[in-house]
Amino acid sequence: MPPSARREQPRSVSHAAVFLVGLNAATFVALLVLMRGNGLMRDERNVYASGRTDVAAAREPSVFLQDEFEVPPGLQAQTTTWQGYIEIPTGGGYAFSAVTWGSFDLRIGNRAVLSNPPELTADRRSIRADADLERGIQPFRLVYNAPISSQAKPGDRAPRLMQLYWTVPGGGEYQHAIGRSWFYPTRPGRVRRAIALLWRVKMGLPVVSILALWWLWIHAELRARPMRKTEESQVA
Image (cartoon, rainbow, N blue to C red; front, top):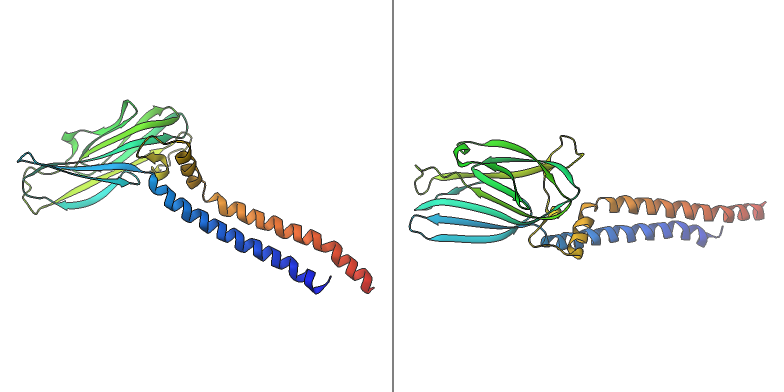
């Protein structure tokens, strides 16, 4: 085999490796940026004794709240609402669970799925409920009320805790947080759903790249063997 042919084989494989690494990195960064369009709209309302109401809105990736806040003067209630749409990947029985400190009400579509009544807000607790859901995009709304003590004074610290998990059909007892790719602030179109799907399978891209690189290496080896045999016969 000529020296140039020997160099061409590993060089082609190394060039393919560099290309695939760059492609994976570019794809991941692009998906990371595009996925900012997913999530839920979160509205936070502070209601005061004077009748004033302060509202702050933001987009959040999921239902996860765990912190404390300083009680301002005259605060009577604080309500946090997550709303938008959720994608149900398959029809069947789902188990929803929540870790919470405060009252809340979760609705998917037109049905109440999970709730914690105001009389059961004295401490942190876990709640679980089952729901049969149809596959597809359904409206999602969760309203959470922070547990503000009637004895609270301005400057006191009040806890906020609201975490939501699910177990999909066939998932056994394993539960996990509902990720950003399953939530949409508005009803999604085909492009937005395709982006979310690519995000869910993103870990498969490196695997496919490794298999492609392995195939290229095998192919290069098979092409090189006849050239080696020809060279050996010429030397003999």
